[in-house]
Image (cartoon, rainbow, N blue to C red; front, side, top):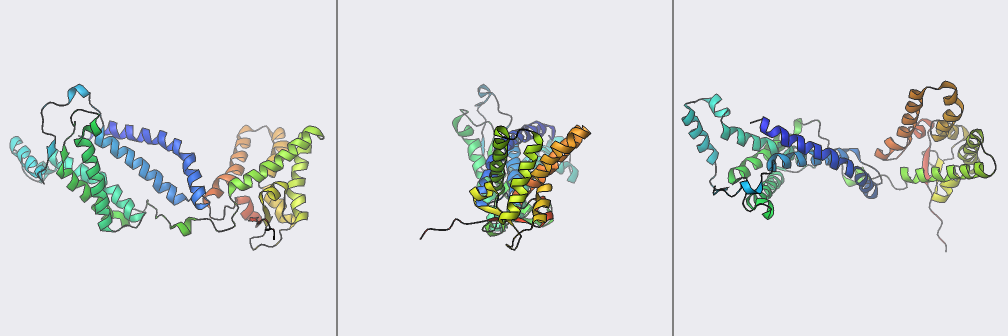
Length: 350
């Protein structure tokens, strides 16, 4: 019996891999639009539910039969509660077996155990991640199971002229019991995180998001590229101009760069005070300016491609990837330097 579920489970997981990749960027955009950041616990729970849902649907509906093989006159609706108990007893009597082992290995018992286990993760997530009570979990489990049975009884909403799987009231009972069992087991499910409230997930007011800082950096680098293209060609001039725009100018102007001025943010201390030249220099040395310095001055002399990839991955991850999950959106270069990007409102005209 177990082997009959392996292929549908593999199909469901493969579908999750493809669908999850397609939903990654929309998910990031949705989280940024709603919370000003990507909340990691919400993302983990959402992706977990997506994987669970696709695998569960594959186990319930796959494999799809040929349409010519359905409508054989069989009764595809069972409305007798606990009919599986009678079927189990008949199966045991037909095989001349008795006892707990015979009961636990019978087809009817294993089918109901599978139906219970299928909905256990739903109950775990509803309680552990979303803090729902037992009544809500029972209602959700019953509603989802009822929707599945309706789809099965209608032949996948008319795609098949007759249903190819039995719509069974016992499935409603076992699925709902599985969701309730999951609610009971949720406290020991340490791998399922609790989804924080919207207030705890949202970035604080005035936080400068990673895309905003990235746009400011692109503006500064475009200025450097334009000047090097027209006046001062060469990698060393590009490095010098980048250091001028990203270190010297902010140290003199109170944290402003040209890109930051356009997007209304500047580099300050966490408390709002002015960041000194040393802190700004450390911030840039551990960020993109340091990466450019490595590319111009160090990489050509070493010629170690693996080290180049490692440096690029570390700098980009610490500067742009990891901060999207933090409430303050601060990169590792900012935390080491003790600086923050501070949003500045445009003064209103009287």
